[in-house]
Length: 251
Image (cartoon, rainbow, N blue to C red; front, side):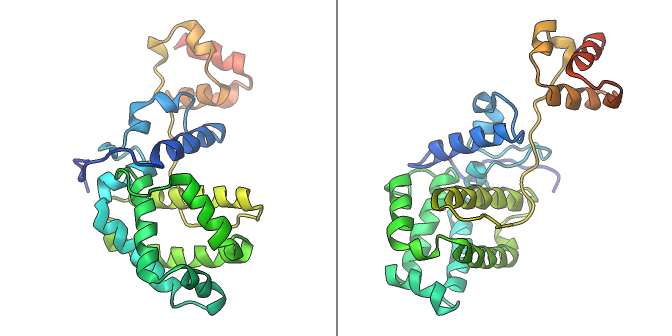
């Protein structure tokens, strides 16, 4: 594909989307996946996927690409696998409701988080209550490993629902990775889940020529080094931050 014209579907915040967005951005900044100030960057916080193909799709922008039907189809495939699995796993879901119940509730949660508007009533409280009271038997390493295996199978089988945009699958993987990490921390189990390639880091575009000396000095060392390398500078010659600052001031 050469270009996109998103949004394909109208977007708005739901019951969960704003909090999940804030939580993810805060975490991603600490892991150098998003630049400092990402909470204020329009391309990051927008619910509409970027049409610049060099920029990743954030998972709260997925509804603008996929819309409701594709999301439901992916979730439907997953729960078909869940209800065909071994009894120790399937029985926990079956006690709560039938396959259609799970498809409806999970798809509503995905749509809500992915920018499709208010769909998952109860938000975080409902999700936490469900895992603590209904699915606690699976909130451990064994349950997470089986859930992940079935989801990876689902994603592999549902490529036709992901459009031709190659950024969709990494965005879905990032969404799933974020939530599995959240559950692992909340329920104190080791997170070994791997869903596939995640979104690449987003680097702030830095133009030293338009920056004051004070602004350059305020940049982090990693940002300085990455920006200088984008300008063709061999930063191995500049081992410390001050040397990097001095080089940037010379450009």
